Image (cartoon, rainbow, N blue to C red; front, side, top):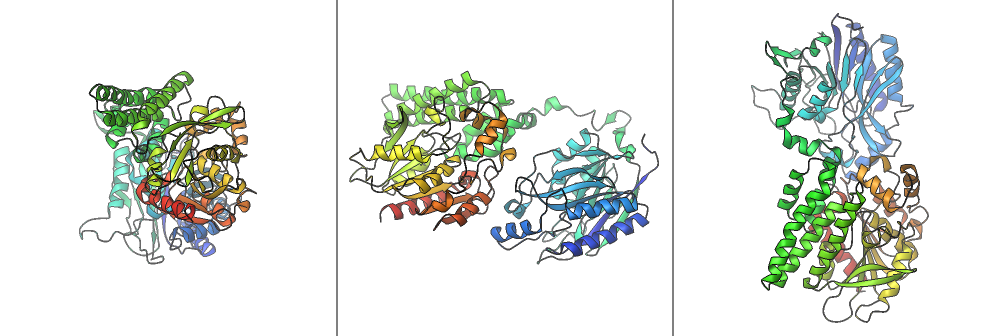
Length: 638
């Protein structure tokens, strides 16, 4: 039963120092004791209150420093101290800490802790600025914990600035949103105004009819100063305590009638939640109603554009998709537009236009099927259209894409070979990833061709034309060896100067091939995993399902086990071939620590890490592809 008496809530504004975990914990303990003396039942501490916030001066040193300061949630010294404080003072603590996940990733986390231990753990979902170089974003909604005297949700700093996030907590029944924050001070604030972050916190309270308790920090850390905006706002948005807006430690308290937040009436005929009209918010629902659609949009839109699909086509197609079941069909609609354009161009006798349209159609069919394993019949039909459309446009590329078959065991693998005019150039084996195909790799191939290199893009086991007959092959050097054997039969390329280029899971394949196929003179691994199962739980569900299908695993558990066999443990140290390890610091599919580990272990490897780069570096396509092509050309033309 809920106690009707108001509950004293406290927010603590602390001066913290990066790397001074013991001192930070002592300062927090003293502030909790002060809040308890004022009758507090809930105490909110700042973001990353144990580790400090301003890590390192480069992406590499920042990650290293944060990792040294992080600890798992289980057995965490900070959470243990909070449990002891909660027991001693008979209260609940909500605070931020630096978490080392069981998956090896770093998280900007917060916990709700009472005398019994950790009641809820939350990982910041919306990372701010350089946090993206250090932490992995959480993918769970704010937890709402029923404490008996009220229901408390927790989120961290920048999360609070997203209206949808606070609304989720309100819809889940939160009375109070507790927000550990580190609000950096803006360059300037108009003299008569409060900082925008404070206003947004008050707006979150008012628009959702909830209490909001923000614990900020103070005093500069490595040259960064803070708003010092700790405050407690009521359900009407007006402050009950604070904001402090001063560069000093503080403990603020306010008596909060938490159950009052459950009455969303704002007038005799108005209710904040009941007056919502979700049916009119269809555009928002289209992008967020199905998490698989949202995940696909977030992870792959830049890839679609970088590899040849117009931004307008991407946006128009995604706008039509409201459910994952619509994904393949709607991309097919866009593809059919280009099929009609190709047929019209052919009839008009304009083969170049026709070829371009056929290749655009092929890409759109590919985007429809690439991770669409829910409906196998629909997926395979789209795949067949991918192959057929590209085949019709392959001959108008310059140089043309020649369809070839590479003997492999008792079958053959489909590939496209493109050879620049004149001479016998070095040749690069282009290796797709889990969900890419030889047709998609042609955008990157143009950079190699422009430097006088030939390319052969191949669908290996579990990829493209082979995905229905051959399961994924962890020992991909067998495939590379088969391609090298085939190239030795050609008279139009230099089979003594073979390179490899692989993207995503293909990056693993390229590195593995560099370790065990001696005919490779150089290799590039782009966003390749060191070991595929290390971030298994963080992968999009479509990616896990696709791996299960293409590895021919009988269950999700078996797929995870098979993912663990795709590892460079033991192989990395065997690499003596020149190797360029390329990665993005903001890669959410294969985090940059994979690349850093491979670069450390492979003899003579070079690391090219673009701090704000995405998976496949599609956010920096020109710069990264130019650099990789230049690197390969220099080593294959020795």
